[in-house]
Image 1 (cartoon, rainbow, N blue to C red):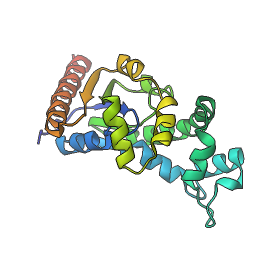
Image 2 (cartoon, one colour; image 1 turned 60 degrees about the vertical axis):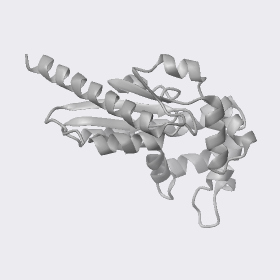
Image 3 (cartoon, helix red, strand yellow; image 1 turned 180 degrees about the vertical axis):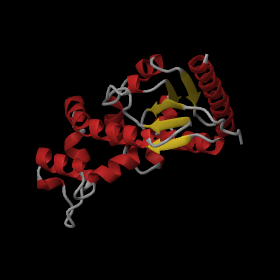
Length: 212
């Protein structure tokens, strides 16, 4: 484990396509000492009854997306929200500002270190400029599909979701750091450690610059 120095906050975005293994990389970063914020968890909280996201979704899509207990049925929501790139963009514009604001609120409560926000659609939502550095988890397409199917998604649903996300090549162009996460978990963990050390160095440079 690498000790986290007593330095100001470095804001880092962590993203990648569906089934790229971002959660695994998030766990590696957490073990190294980064403070992690999971955008999917924020979404889940915003979707709960009484939360801002729940209200916005019901207003936009109607009560048909609700379960009998009044909570959002995410499968029903996905069926209407991911029919096309335009539909996916509509959902993103609705929910992501709420998620980003909540992430910013949580970051504001952290006084020092590396804070990493993991979000699948971080670039697509226009959030990349909010972060000092952007880390992209990359995966070969055939491995991505195999992992998605292993997680219980149909090949058709997975292909549709991938088509509605930013193309791999374009996502990589936004990256400050790339972590390949294919078959070799050991290699992915070593690369995560390399990236974390680079982020620590960036944090130190910024601290030195601000104090000079």
